Amino acid sequence: MNICKSLLVIFFVFFSSHNVIADDKIEHKIAVLVNEDVITSYDIIQRLKLTAIIQGINLNAQNTQLMVNNVVDELIREKVKLSKINEYQIKVKDEEYTEFEINFFIRNKINQDEIVNLLRENKINYQELKKYLMGELAWNKLINGLFFRLTSISDLEVDEVISKNPSLSVEQAENLVIQRQLDLQSSKLLRDILNEATIEYK
Image (cartoon, rainbow, N blue to C red; front, side, top):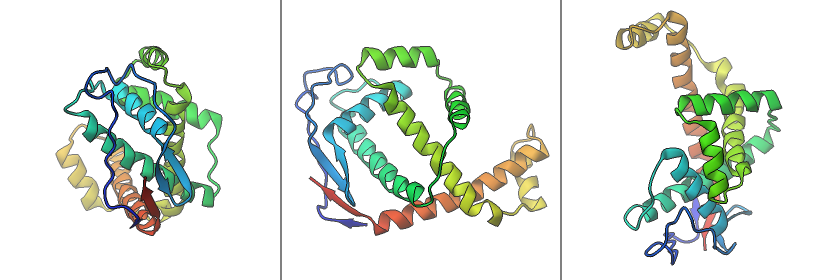
């Protein structure tokens, strides 16, 4: 990863005296360049608020800077993922996205209506959430397309999974074994494209 500046430190004047979730008065200044793609201060604040709402975190002076740094790293990863998604021309159908979104709320035990209302109250465009989920789904499709045929399942691996989770069926255990292999390939590919990326912190 070619980094033109070694450290990103983002300070927002409202950290000390304002509720971060409620504050949307932030300029659209360029914060990071990922290759030629821009991440603005507005992007960071929108994702910061979105993450806090989804995870049920109350932002304060003690945790906000750490959250900001995590959000910046996440947005950088999304930019490089998107470049690879576009390279392979991965498309997501409407019905695929709808199912993925429903499963996201179920998996994270989130009430969709409550989240939608919180997003509206905090002036977060619902498209921010949709863009995030769409990116995750497209990346999953890319990883499956590239690496699923390379996966393999052994009885030993399946037995090991079931021994640790006796309630699982053989099919569920097999799916877990495959998913672990895909996750490893995903991590490796992401690491490789991050290493190739030029990242400049403003």
